[in-house]
Length: 77
Image 1: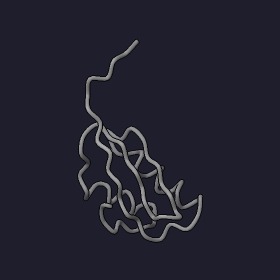
Image 2: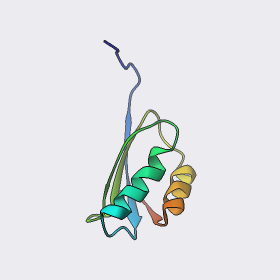
Image 3: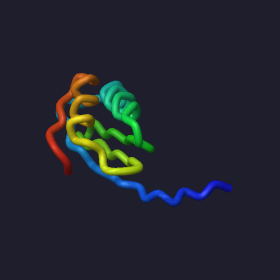
Image 4: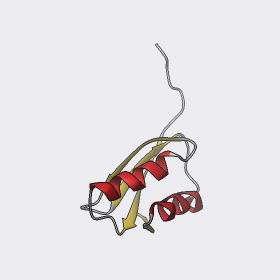
């Protein structure tokens, strides 16, 4: 059994332009590629993306990943 001693950070971002499951998948895929990200849950209906990571993420890195997916980071919720 492995024990994770590290604390996890949950951050909710507001993303504009997501309208469907494909959008959610594109954003999730790009953010999942950021080092330290444990999980990503995107919800097009609310425009919110919940990210669990090993440490706080650099907002510029998250913004670049969302831009790469074709959407815009509106800030944190």
